[in-house]
Image (cartoon, rainbow, N blue to C red):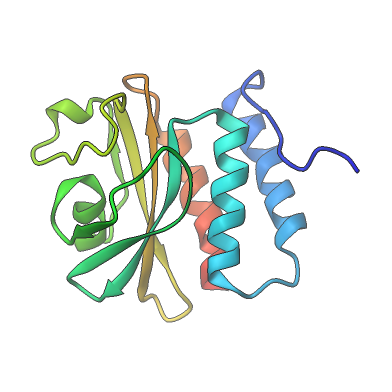
Length: 161
């Protein structure tokens, strides 16, 4: 069997995302389970780019509380309140947050001291309800940009189908 997780770090970012999108679509074809989708995306994103932490925080109390879901990396925070840290802020506003330096973000929650930058993307369901946030941490400052925002938002659109 061919390797299922791709290491795409050597490719230009846009090309890497194009390959990753195709791979995720192929793996998730016929799947309608959001937790399986989160687990699959976490795994494939994490290995494709070698991030520090890649995963989802699921909405367990709408408007109030996120709880750790499928992820790859070191131990994550178990719960995050809406409005707290980067994940809680993205959940509260429904907008992607790209943070070049997490130490400069007011109220940043340090689940791993090695985290230097972060991107958090809201994940919406079929009826535009917030299901989760996709959280990716890097050990490098300014690791995420507009390409990451655009491509990750397109990727999590899978949950709206």
